[in-house]
Image 1 (spheres, rainbow, N blue to C red):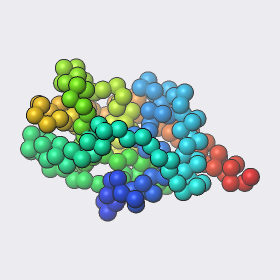
Image 2 (cartoon, rainbow, N blue to C red):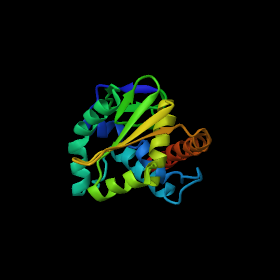
Image 3 (cartoon, rainbow, N blue to C red):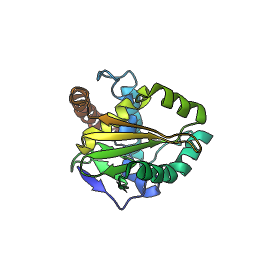
Length: 202
């Protein structure tokens, strides 16, 4: 794993560094929770190919909850540190290896073995997380993908909403899923390079 500590998440440099690279937040577009190829993988591949060739990323929609979540992330991280006694090291980007073809941006590194993934959803969604007490399905590939990229053993999933109890869940590495993910990512990265070469040759 290669860690970029000098890059700030959300910055221009961070967005440039991620251009055309499959990242953990997009792994659900490559594989399902069962570890098989997703129907959206081709579209995601073409999107990344366009980013790599043009050097530009298409504007993505941000709603109020997403913007509020970004604003509250520092507050949530501080709350996590208080609740757990864990010190969180913030990083910009983690690459799987020196090829820099696969990456992730965890919300923090915890000790030698852990990661932190913060979510600041709406109050209704946060209540649902508290009642269900499990990792939300929509974040399974992201969390396991971060564990794959970083090689770490566990990730603390932390949901935060002001004036409500936080939701903390430790998620262990799912070795069987990660094996399947690795296979699909290797194929995806190879095909992505082939698509880029074809388009550049036209």
